[in-house]
Amino acid sequence: MAETAASPTAAKTAADKNLEARVSPAKQLAEAFAAGSLAGTVELSELPFLTMVGLRATAGSDTANRLAAVTGGLPASSGAVAGNGDTSVLWLGPGEFLVVAPTEAHESLGGGLIPALRDALGGDAGQVVDLSANRTTFELSGPRARGVLEKGCSLDLHPRVFKAGTAFSTEIANIPAILWKTGEDSFRIFPRASFAEFLGRWLLDAMREYASPEVP
Image 1: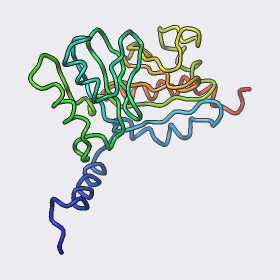
Image 2 (image 1 turned 180 degrees about the horizontal axis):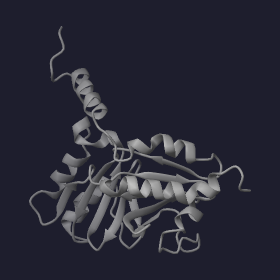
Image 3 (image 1 turned 90 degrees about the vertical axis):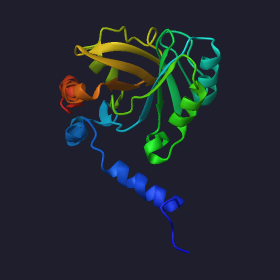
Image 4 (image 1 turned 45 degrees about the vertical axis):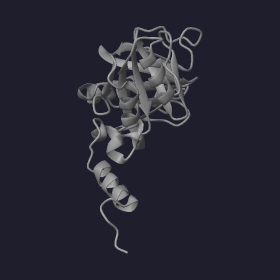
């Protein structure tokens, strides 16, 4: 029996073509990121096309509770991160959150996260906005990652203050970004797409001394 356009195989093929057509905001820096990284010291890469959704809902409201049921929870305080499995929710402000999920969670690739959030919102006061194209994601990791960020970030990044599993809106090299500490020596940085190349090049320059084999 011939496959139709609605078949799972045809839908997957369409999703693959959709993804292949995308160009990430820092694609032109991929080779520079690889060349400027030193395994075990400091490494920089772009994680393109993560699914990101902006949420607004009053804490404790029925709307917030329904959204939390989809995401696995909503963070309750500044810096907190909630979620379930591959889906994380970062606190941006009172009643404002950023959902971060894998690429395949996006509805253009057949994912159901965004439609589920829209359904949870219903017609009540609040907001569900697809922000996937608004930002890109840099991953900075290694024992020298904090040292790189300290050259241009106003946050106190000492581990006793900035603990793994927390995220804050800040500025890095005067560029607004969200900084999420995902592990003891790993960070995810979310700049807006229009600032991605500038911030990527700044990070490369800031890590140059640490990534050089001539520096002990």
